[in-house]
Amino acid sequence: MARWTRAAAASALAMLALGAGAEAKTKVTWWDFLSGGDGLRMKAMIQAFEKDNPDIEIDATTLEWGIPFYTKVQTAAAIGQGPDIMTYALSRIPLGVSTGSLRPFSDAELSSVGLAAKDYVPSDWDAAHVDGKLYAVPLDIHSIILYYNKDLLKKAGLLGDDGRPKGLDGLTNFDAALAKLTDPASGRYGLSIHDGQPDGSSVWRIFYTLLKQQSGTFLKDGKVLEGENGTKAETALGAIADWVGRGWAPKATSYPASLALFTSGKAAMHVNGVWEVPTMVDLAKADKLGFAWGAVQFPTLFDRPATWADSHAFAVPARKGNAVSPETMKAVMTVIAWMDRHGIDWASAGHIPAYRPVTDGPAFLALKPNADYAGLARTAEFDPKSTVTGVASPTYDAATNFMEPAVNGQLDAKSAIAQTRDQIQDALQ
Image 1 (cartoon, rainbow, N blue to C red):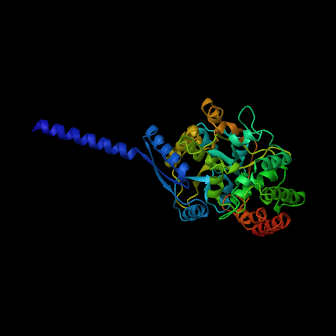
Image 2: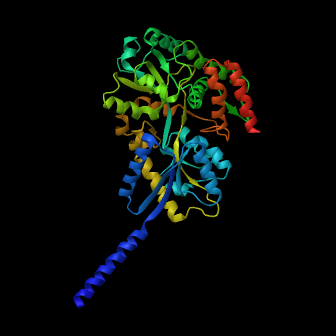
Image 3: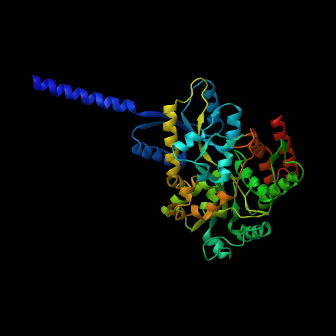
């Protein structure tokens, strides 16, 4: 009987110990907008994090990308609800700050997990700040890149011995290459871009790249495309419209169709985000591509190298009356630091890790094709800091309403830029 009592007591103590261990876990509520390949990779990273950090449990939820996500964050924060940590586009930080939805990070919080400004590319780090305060910690830099068919470029004499395109810098050279690569008889285009519905996001990214390559400014001191910036904007948009008007790129092409033109060999080059690298890798591995491919930084067509860019980042909501507790915030910082230091896993989604010790490391430098376009991080151009720019903003609406029709020949570039200017200027009032 005594033996049974001792065994029962030992069992009870063990159960209590297990219960105490379970209670010691810190739960971190996580929201993201990552779907497709990005979503799968992030879920795997969360599982790996929990394995490395058994005292922290991440309760993750994936919500719809775009306006629905940011609206839900704003609504939840206003009533003291929502996550402890969330993914956030740096281009949306100004709007999030203006609505009181975001909580800044302190220097002490960063240093507690060994993070510092020197660990990040300056343009990425700057985009995470508003009025000198850090509102997000970058995870990556993502941008548009030039995908190319090595077989077709080699045949056209446009492939270097290193397997990279040659002779594409300068608008005149780029146009000549498109003309050379286009073959109407076989139905092949020199280039495919997403220039059709449902939105003008891709047109905006190319337009902004070409504007910044001319050292143009979209928004400054509350003025949209003022003075010579308007002329540079017309030049940028006119260049894209010319590719379509001359038949070097197809009209009104949906996003999936623009990608399919390239993967089927019906377009020699393709402009898209780094996020389609996994698509290309998977098709090549499955032997479903039919040609050798590569990806490089978008060519410099004007005066200086520059490429539109944004960043997935981690932010914490400013939950009214229910701020994230110090204990949970400690766990949140552990999550952020771990994710950034394991950025090589995120790089498999095509992104360039924001954490420089990763991008400067041998594993990333050997990662193809990422390493071939990693230089764009140094010339990245983020959208202007404003409540009317960035992902799912009035600026993207204007790109859909005016810039995309101009590319497809329904408006001239001058009229499209004038209407874009008016719409965004009104939105600033």
